[in-house]
Structure formats: C-alpha cells, structure tokens
Amino acid sequence: MDASVNRIPISENEKAILIGIHLPQDTDDEISHSLDELSQLVITAGAVVVTRLIVRRPSLDPAYIIGSGKLEEIKKLILEQSVKLVVFDLNNIRPVQIRNLENLLGCRVIGRTEVILDIFARRAKTVESKIQVELAQLNYILPRLKGLGGVLSRLGGGIGTRGPGEKMLETDRRHIVKRIQTLKKKLSHISIHRNVQRQERLQKEIIGSVVGYTNAGKSTLVNILAKDDLFVEDRLFATLDAYTRIVYLDESHKVLLTDTVGFINNLPSHLVESFKSTLEEIQYSDFIIHVVGLDTDIDKAVSVVDHELQLLHCKHKPLILYFNKIDIAKEETIQYVRLRFPDAILGSCVTGEGIKLLKERIIAIAETLKKEKQKILLYS
Ligand SMILES: Nc1nc2c(ncn2[C@@H]2O[C@H](COP(=O)(O)OP(=O)(O)OP(=O)(O)O)[C@@H](O)[C@H]2O)c(=O)[nH]1
Ligand SMILES: [Mg+2]
Image 1: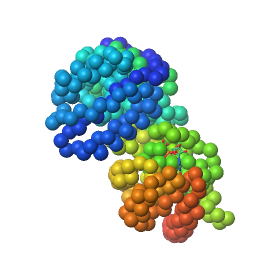
Image 2: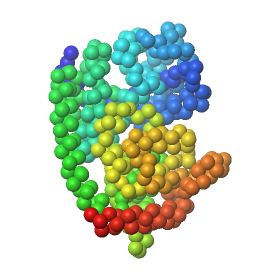
Image 3: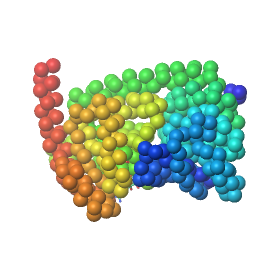
Image 4: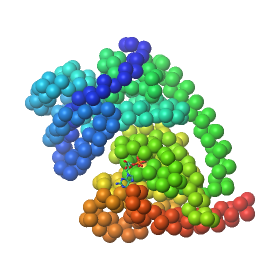
C-alpha cells in the first residue's frame, strides 16, 4: 500500500448519484428529507447531483448494500451521464461493501460520513479545527484500512479523501497511529491554554453559547447582536470554530456570546469526539440560545440538538429557544411552533422581528446569573 495519498483538489463539479435506502421501518417522509439534506451536503462538498434514487430493501445486502437488478440500472446511469461518484445515504458503509461496489460500478462509492468529513476538511481554518478534522479523518480511516485493501490510495482524490488544507492524508497504519498521538498531544496543549483563558473569563463575565442545527442562522444572529461580521454563508457547516463576541444588550448589560459549529442528524461520532474542545465552549457557558430555522424539519432539528446537549451534559443550563427565519416561514409552521413551543421566541435576523424580545430574555437570564456569580465570589 502507498504510504500516503496526495491531496488532489476536487475535480470541480464532479457528477454524483445519490441513493437512499428505504427499509421497512422507514417512512417516505424520513427518507426524502434525509436525501434532501444529503443532496445539500454533497453540493456543499463541491459535486453536482445528477440523479437521486430511492431503493426499497427488506434489509441491507452484506456484500453490495442493494440488489443486482438495481446495480445494473445504476451502472447504466453512470456510463450515460459520466458519473464519478455514488453516495449512499448511510453512515457506516462496510469497507468490503465499498470495495465490491467500486469494482462493480467503476467509480468511487462513499457514504454520509465521508461527505461530512470532507466538508469539515475544507472548512477548517484555525490550527485547532484543522487538527480536530484531521484527527477525525484518521480515526475514521484507521479501522477501515485493511478492509479497503488500499482503495484510498487507488482512488486518488475527490470527496472523502481530502485532508485539511493542502496536507496529505496518511494511509499507512503505522504512520496514522503515530500521527494520531501527535495530534492528540497538540490538541491537549491548546485545550490547557484555552482553559486558563476560560477560567478568567468565567469569573468576570456572563457567557452564552449559540447552538443549533447547521444553517439555522446562528452566525447571522451573533452578527446582528454583536453588530459584527462573522462568516455567514448559505451552506452547511459554514462555521467550524467557536467564535466569542461581546454583545451590548442595553446601557447596563453586556454578555459574551459564542457562535458554535452546527449540528446535523447523525453527525459522525469521530467528529463529535474530535471537536470536543470546541464543544466544551457550550459546556462552560452560563446559558444557551438554541436557534432553529423555521425553514427546516423543525421537530428533527430540535430533537437532534436536544440530544447533543444531553450528551454534553448541558440540559440543566438556562436555555432560550429562538425560532429564526420567520420572514420566510409558512403560516402553518408558525402556528405549529407557537402551540408546540409556547415559551419560544419567533423572529428573523433579516427583518429584526423578535430580536428586542430575545435581548430582553437574555437580560433577564444575565441578571439572575450575575447574582448567582456574585454569591459564589462572596463565599469563595
Ligand atoms: N430569510 C432569512 N434568512 C436568514 C435568516 N437568518 C439567517 N439567514 C440565512 O441563512 C443562511 C445560514 O445562516 P448562518 O448564520 O451561516 O447559519 P449557521 O447556523 O451559522 O450555519 P452553520 O455555521 O453552517 O452551522 C444564510 O444564508 C443567512 O443569510 C433569517 O432570519 N431569514
Ligand atoms: Mg455559522
């Protein structure tokens, strides 16, 4: 096996076929929402979706995921439309399935995890997030190396094979193990430094985290509250680093607000693990603003973020639920949210609706927290 692969820039507009698998327990809605989201992810990664297919299966085929009839159909499409990439809406495709499918179809085969890792690899800008992404990729690749039988080296480039920046992604087991240790050490140094800064800040300031599903409008909200210019983009995972900004709520109140990386359904566990130190910002904050885009599958977005907050042991913190993008929301969605989440604030970063109410709610929380902190300082 080659020691490493060069990071080959993505062939722009690589054509892709998406395949969703409909198992007996799935509903039509679930599958089609999930495929919509995968499509957005694949586009964000730089490819062009030429066809989407949904395949009904009683269970996954251990060797080829789907049946031979469907595979023949897909093979024809690949040839007709010069497709370079097949993306399955599955999280953990087994290496043997990838190898079998690539041999049969004659193009690259990846799953959801690889697409998300790829987007993160391209988005990583700071030293810390680059290390975090590389660590996630290597941890993902390591157990798969044997099963892939060198597929990674053979494939060369494209979605799912990029390292952060222009770096090479290691594919040699010994090197990977060593590299993982080095990266972990680097991360822990950064984390120690961050902790010292954090402790100082925590004693003096009230700190909130803005969390939510990707593309909900978290960065836009922090921008307008802080009148700042964070990186906002109509793409998934525009923000990978935790940015903290000062927000002046009125003449006598200010808080610090941290913008965080977005969550998504089935976020690869390696990424959550690697982004632990960034996510720690949420754990160390005094309160949370959960932003939900009214233009998405609301119940899913809320439950995915709730679940992540639970995993981060943050469910006890004061929380403001803010539904964003009311300017483009359907009337029935607004009605539904008002009934289902009576305490939530509905608003828009574009028209400014609801922002005054949001500030008032933050001030109320900040007041309570300030008193608690003063008590702690008094008795410590
Ligand atoms: N119509 C409308 N669009 C909005 C609103 N708020 C944000 N957007 C748009 O939604 C898109 C995503 O906004 P971001 O602020 O980048 O979202 P995010 O939650 O930070 O996304 P990630 O960092 O990718 O997780 C951008 O195109 C924004 O301009 C709003 O209130 N109304
Ligand atoms: Mg953002």
